[in-house]
Amino acid sequence: MDGYNPLWLSDDLKDRVAMLTNISTPHQEFIDFLIQKLSPQEIIAFQASPEAQERTRILIERQSAGLLTQEEIAEIEQIRQFERLFALVKARALKALQQA
Image (cartoon, rainbow, N blue to C red; front, side, top):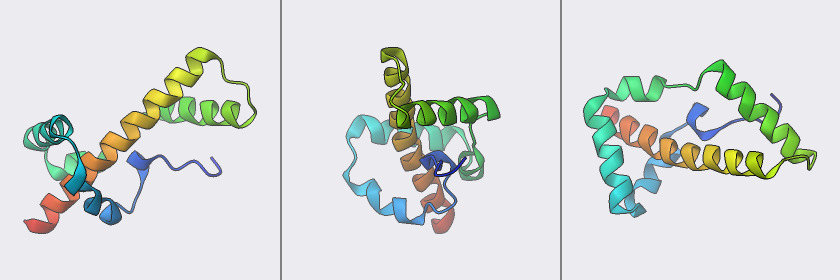
């Protein structure tokens, strides 16, 4: 998986904590909801299934080769949106752990 490092698999979330000050209210409410329902440790430990990781890797390879279909373009964009949102969720969980 050369070069494959989705945000929700990142080991270093500390830099992302700073991003939390400028997110919209709906995003903030969703993040707060998740943090209230799951422990920070559960959130930080989350990883996509091996199947989902493999699908993402395949899409990235196909994108690099210029072979994505319109459906795959939409799929990879959804993955990117999820990665951005979940990076914020994990950063908030890390912040909660640091403040505890």
